[in-house]
Length: 231
View 1 (tube, rainbow, N blue to C red):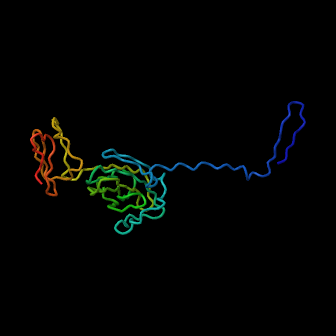
View 2 (cartoon, helix red, strand yellow):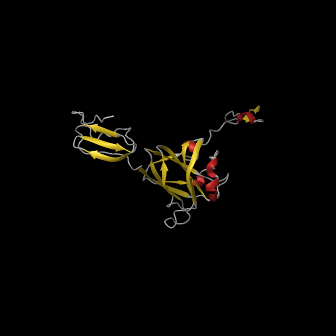
View 3 (cartoon, rainbow, N blue to C red):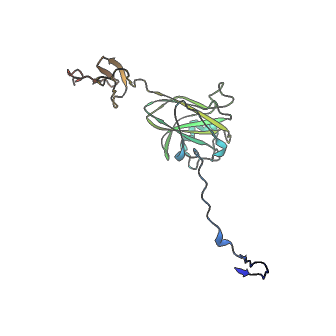
């Protein structure tokens, strides 16, 4: 670096001539990842609360699950297909519906269970919203899921992008037991490990359930041993 100080009758100044800028480059912070761009930062959704995202702001998944091939090949996804990831945390075994009928472009959708990096496909769809969608929107209806995270990957046919509007609906597996009302003796305190049941006898002070595996469970007032089900 060379410097030159001119003579001035006003005030001294300093002129610096930089001949080599290579060492002055500063590392810029990495751009923040858009929410939903990868499985690892999937957008968490809840039942009956639609969410929207512009898939044009996304990138193609860096390491997409290989299970997109086979029965889902009709969606024409490729290495440049931009997609958005969502996650629904199923509170119990049940059936999950994913609707994209309010989207404004040609959507496609795949549903997975498992964990990021070890996902397995359970459903996919391309155009089944017809005729309820504007044109070529997707939906997955009443898909059986187990308790835990369910990942929903939304893209477009080929390289199509637009505003994806996702609405999920969830129903617990038939046989799930809930109780309400008077709970003086704990008769509404359904055991957390009860499982699925085929029939219920709701008494005034205690409740009995016949489970689908053939065993009986009882809870509530047990002052007279009425919940001591014989082995």
